[in-house]
Image (cartoon, rainbow, N blue to C red; front, side, top):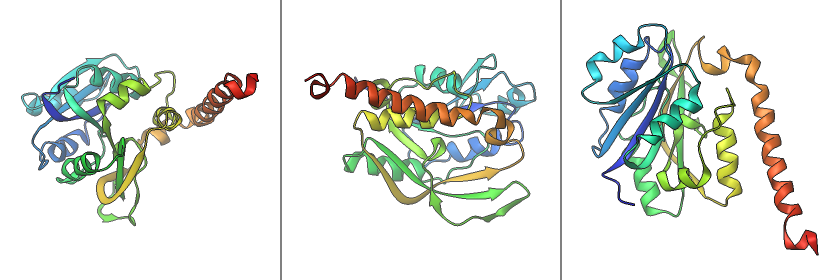
Length: 228
């Protein structure tokens, strides 16, 4: 399949009026110019739609009723035209060379997905950054559309751990991942982070891990060795 551009940025936005402009300014300033940005307004009830008005000529804008981050990402990816997909949360910031660094890694190694490193910062102290740490999370990732199609969509039944669930499926299929040393994400910590807002859904992490173990047991029981 031929892709008209290199990178599609996938951004779900739910009640993101305080952050979405800063996020988009960073995404749209990338040194890699063969890129598109797709924003899905996931049923926001604040001024997110109005904040996106100045950007509508430079992004693909989609709307849905509030269905959660998995459904929003799946919708955006259905409309994506890029060979590679990168996930960004509406409250985060990315350095201008993020796409360039991650593309180089994907195109010069045998990795199927690339993560980078991140620094975290508190909302009330945006100039104070944490120590460098691996960004093995949605906002630190880039992978090919082909790989995504083979692994399958994000599970909309999971409010949290949807990326962990997808990553475990990715690994179960034998795909390779690589962590590059470059900073690819500045992650904002605030009172409305999804992990804070949805504490009651943290059991989703257990569900994702259990589902992975169940799949492994099923493959093992169906293998020729187990039947012999």
